[in-house]
Image (tube, rainbow, N blue to C red; front, side):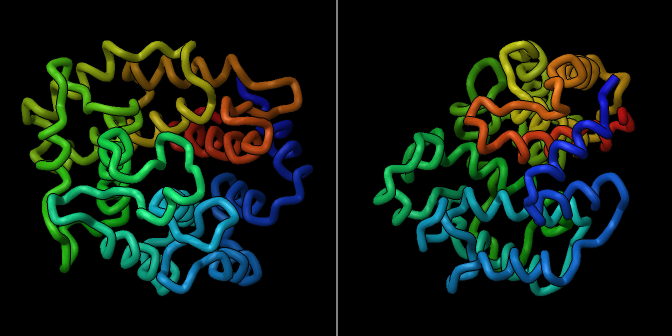
Length: 269
C-alpha cells in the first residue's frame, strides 16, 4: 500500500507553492489560490508560451508541462487555458505534427528537445494531440493538419511509434480518438505497448506518464498493463514517501505529485 501521508508530507516539506496546490487539487479537489494562478501566469512569456528552463525562450515542452498542471486543477476553459492552447496551435506544423521551437537549439537542450529531430517531433506531436483531446479541443479552428496522419507515417512493424516510448503511449490517446478504438492502428499500437512494457525498467515519472495515457483511453485497474504499472509504483515508494526520478533529485517532488495523481485516478490511494 502507498503511504499517502508520507508522500504529502514530503511534498509539503519542499515549500513549492505550485506543487502543493497541485497536490491539494488532486487529493482534496481544492482550487488553487489566485496567488498560485498569478505565479503561473507570471511564468508566461510574451508569445503566450512558457520558457525553456530559465531562459527567456518559450518551448513546446515547457508549455506541455503547464498543461499538465492545468489538468490537475481540472481547468478546461478561461484565459489561462485558452492562451496556452493558442500558443500550441500556433506552432503546429503544416504536416499536422509539432516540433520544438528552433530557438531552443541555442541553449544546448537535452536530446528529447532538439528541434528538427524525428524523435522530438513524434513525442511532441503525440503529447500535444493527447492534451488537445483531453481538454475537449480536438480539431480546433485553425488546425493545420491531422496529427494522427503524421504519427501513422512513423509507425514501426511492431505497431509502436518511432522514437521515445512516450510517443507511443500518448499516441494511444490520439488513435483511440481517431481512427478509433476498433481500428487496426489503435489495436496494433496497444498490442505493441503491452509487448514492450517492462515495468522494472521505468521510474516513477515514466509509470505515471503511462498511466495517464491508459486512463485517457478508458482502461481500468482490471487491465493487466494498468495493474502492472500500479503495483510497480506501489513497490518503489521511498522511505520518505517520495518517488525518485531518473532525471535527478530536483525532479523528485514533481514525480511524487505525478505518481499521486496517477494512483488517485485509478482509486488506488
